[in-house]
Length: 225
Image 1 (cartoon, one colour):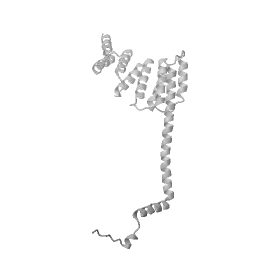
Image 2: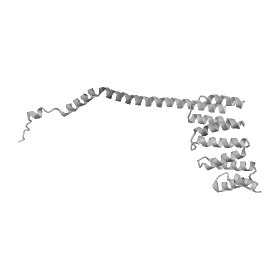
Image 3: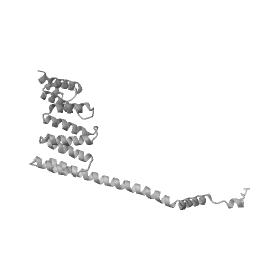
Image 4: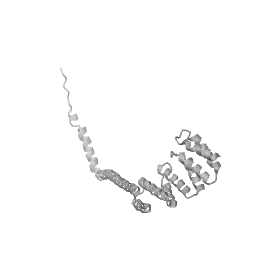
């Protein structure tokens, strides 16, 4: 026969644990109501601010990409007057905010100055990128090469030699075959035949599997005579 369980009157008077916990939460909330509301409001403000900042950054990025697209359109347009085209590109560049899109736009504008032999203007823009970008970034490496080519264009061969050697010694991933060739050319143009030959011999070792190695061998044959 099943035994009946007797419940003492004292046990019936014990408060329900769930109700007691709830009462404690409400009591705590009532006591710290102002502080809790402030904390919740602060959390909501941080979350909303994060979404707002991200939204604004996305809009800004889209606008910069749109401006860069206009720069490319201007560059590739069949403009009969290159200086007029460059003027339009300069006006577009002024609308950019600081960032990678502006650096890319600055690069293509500098390249346009280089193409019309305005080397000082090109060097100035390339150097702007060098001061604003990490040496590990591709923009930095392209700007470094732009400075070297511009110095060579100005017939400042000693300056160009220093610039080309700096690129080679930087140990970045920038392709160096044509940088070496340019370095050898500048040695020849500055009447340093030994420097040119040493550079070409180093190229034969370093770029032994390069598809354009024949260029190196033909110049070695030409300059060794």
